[in-house]
Amino acid sequence: EAAPGPGEKEEAAPAPKKRRLAAGERYVPPPRKLSTGVSFGAAHFAETSYYFEGGLRKVRPYYFDFRTYCKGRWVGRSLLHVFSTEFRAQPLAYYRAAARAGRLRLNEEPVRDLDVVLKNNDFLRNTVHRHEPPVTAQPIQILVEDNEMVVVDKPSSLPVHPCGRFRHNTVIFILGKEHDLKELHTIHRLDRMTSGVLMFAKTTEVSKRIDEQVRERQLEKEYVCRVVGEFPEHEVVCEEPILVVSYKVGVCRVDPKGKPCITIFQRLSYNGKTSVVKCLPRTGRTHQIRVHLQYLGHPIVNDPIYNMEAWGPDRGKGGKIDKTDEELLKALVEEHRSKQSLDILGILEEDLNSSAENKDCGNSSDCTKSAQADPINENSCPAKDTKDLERNDTAACPPNSDTNLETLEKNKELGSCEIQDGQTGEKSSEEKDPLCVECKITRRDPSPKELVMYLHALRYKGAEFEYCSKMPEWAMEDWEE
Image (cartoon, rainbow, N blue to C red; front, side, top):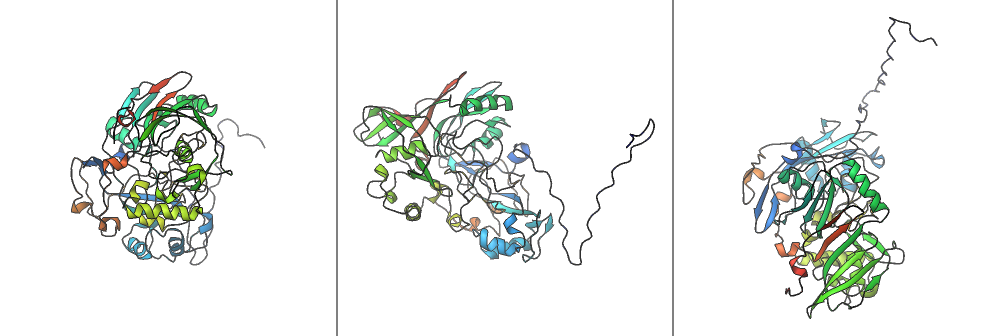
């Protein structure tokens, strides 16, 4: 076919015709292109503010939109059925009340009838009154900042990035809100309860360069911890494979079916009760150091998972548990429930009643929720810069392959929830929401001491860099509990 000559206009392609809807058929708009990554800016940081109380950093409750496209397994099911079978953290009465209040939207139209049948590409938005658990008030210390990198000393109890119930009480948000450090690229991750050296790249190029070193296992990592009992004086190498028991609670154990891993241990000191041990992980499995120490019979002194009575009289030494995985998880949850410390695990009672775990979700104690695309409960993690779980030391949450979320969205001010910056102290009446179950509950705050675990990332060394933090006080030879 001849091309149009000079001065001739090429005819525009005809616009696609909309399919005529059958009587009573509901129109579903075509899906929007979702962002390939997550970047947080001023609008996100302005959603709410912090206040400090009793040695804790707290977040004022705020309104937030969870958004998701309809999952394939939901097609043909009513919205009511999906809520009742997959999102049981809230009673059906809550969803009915939320619909009446205009907080549930389907394709940006208010949901009036929860019996509506879902179609492929339906877009759900749920506005919730969001509460975050407190974290330590200990500040984030910036060790290095240059044109390429930001390196910090992360306090214990802080997740690296938004995950599970945490959003503003994360390293990424605190650095953005209080240090004006934005659009950082995560190079590696630490468990929420692990403190120490945490590196971010300022550009994609630097992130890729260091990630290549991580892939090739050229990154040297050194941790220090305080463990129960007298650790052997000689070097100890543990090569036991590790298996994930629960993605939701964040529990692993030694198992022949697990992934191979290696950790080298060397005792630094012993005070008659506990030992300070240097740890050199050669692989990066979830909770690797903690699980290997438990297996060796020297769990971390205050480990809220691997030094618990739920593991039995030997506390998991030598892999001896004498419980099924289900019995173990139940015992761990019950032990924390009896101590009113479920929050230390990062979970709530409601979480335990919610949908079954999604095995596609990688794990961490950060990843406290099922990683299903829950328009009520936030997806496990943002997708940006997420690395292979096997290359993380104490990995936070990897992306979930079954989710197509755009959950990390600016908040939506509703009703009378006017939150003012600079306030201190308890929640005011303006911060309470009539539909919010969490607003009606009074929870015991953890003590600052409960939010510290004696595991610290001391040093990271690559081909062109070496970053170190100070030895924590609890790792000093003359330290006493």
